[in-house]
Image (cartoon, rainbow, N blue to C red; front, side):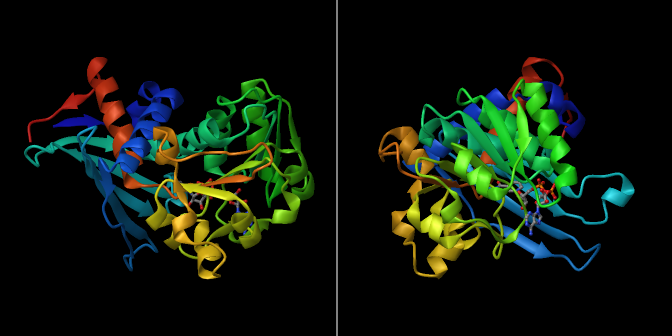
Length: 321
Ligand code: NAD
């Protein structure tokens, strides 16, 4: 069995490799070649932790396995990341464990890659202004990945706590893009592409604030009850997702579906757009919205890619098992 520890991932994995892995697995899901299995997520009654796992099988990429981990709120005080995840890959022919891979950085890279894939396939090609709502851990990864997909000329951002906006301005500076902190009215009025990546449980951005032609990648809502944008914005948009079953239960679509404003059948898998079996954006004025809920197959795809990279560079650790 191969081990690729968390500390090795940063030197191995790139946003480009994550993008390719995620685009391919979304396409495989839509062809029926890859399937996510039901998600387990439980409060364990210890250390206030939420623990769970996401698993699946990609018959095209031959990736079988799971990402296990969750949220340990006391970790920061111990000098550790609150979100913890580890990927285990299995040989689909024998069921034997193939690799154990650190999943923390990979989670951020695969989540950002999903938003970037949506921008590649759904945003207007003339998009110039990138808007980011949220300035937490994920936000910098989101900005880097999405900025690569269009000729953006500037970045604007909003965060509930303005003190944290420094993360966005630093990241934009690294990318050579000017950054400005704005209110939500300006963000919606000026941005061509908007990424929302917060842990909010109530709408932040409303339909009235968003102008025609905008593409939104709503990445923060991955749990029942979370919400980032208004129901009327979701029902106004052409809606795409990684997986419809997750979008209607734990994704941004859950609220519009529960309110009877959106039918699950009206939500398109991004993989179908990638495969050319469903239309993406159909007009320059259309608002498109990608509900990125985060599926286990994304984790397996980036973990398999990093194992290949680690083996090619001779840095994967082999252990008899
Ligand atoms: P973080 O804790 O580092 O940052 C949280 C962000 O949310 C901050 O910007 C904070 O100001 C903002 N926020 C919190 N409550 C808010 C509220 N009520 N109104 C407005 N803003 C609020 O978290 P992170 O690691 O950056 O993750 C952000 C979100 O993305 C989380 O909800 C996380 O669960 C989700 N996530 C989704 C996926 C996916 O695949 N879709 C993957 C990883 C993380």
